[in-house]
Amino acid sequence: MLTARFRPPAVRALIGLGAALCLTTVALPGAPSTAPVGATDTVPSVPASGEQFDAGSDALTSAASKFVPITPIRALDTRIDEGYGRVYRDSAISIDPVTDTGVAESAGVDPADIVAIAANVTVVQAGGFGYATVWPTGSPRTTTATNNTEVDGQNIGNLVLAPLGLERKISFYPSVDAHVTIDVLGVFVASDASDDGRFEPLGPVRHTDTREGERMAAGETRTFDLTTVGVPADAAGVVMNLTAFDANGRGYYTVWGSGEPQPHTANVNLTTAGYAAGNQVIAPTTDGK
Image 1: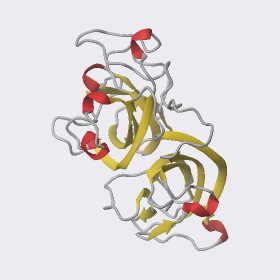
Image 2 (image 1 turned 90 degrees about the horizontal axis):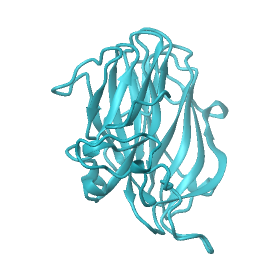
Image 3 (image 1 turned 30 degrees about the vertical axis):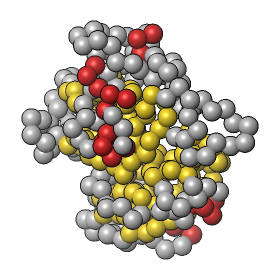
Image 4 (image 1 turned 45 degrees about the vertical axis):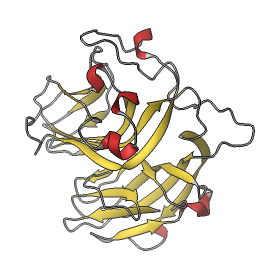
């Protein structure tokens, strides 16, 4: 089951829910058994401690992987986590998001087998116009951005697929002062061949558009049956775009598998009245819901 909740303060917004892909636990007839997620030129193997590697080098390659979705877990919040604080511009921090955070345990895997994570990375209370980036620790910082900020005080999240680097760590760099939260949605585990944890395309197709019905109220929770748009009942999870329109104030959206405790995470952040924001979401499902 899939549940979405909109949190106040005193905010109403319209929600658009479009399912694009599903994670299926059953191989399609005639489909290859090797996992297409985590292609061999993108999934890292961790080099010996102290060794540095380049983001595009052979040291960052290994066998293919399979994806294991989990109920979101907040691996980092620099506003409250001991040992961290606001990250100053042009500096960087590194964390292990899987070993002591409950992520590996939730996925039911050994942390040493995790080669990458799917995470919602949110820049919080940005210091102004700038950007942030996430990359595997031990490799040179990339010249790309995972988040872009426009104004002082902005909160903006983005779904990131991040390979793990040295000591199973990822690094975060902001070009402006900012806090950061990292919510892990799932892990990629090394697997030469697998029938589960595979991506199967569906569309994309729009499941819900509340502009054609009733707006979501602040604090409201809704559950969505995605089998009506072709998500198999035995799918382990779904990849979708979640877009909030016409908010009347500051707040956020959280998506999680219904029947599970609501996680203390956010998928879409809204900063001002009238704001529209979207983000890709990977969420576990039960019976396609």
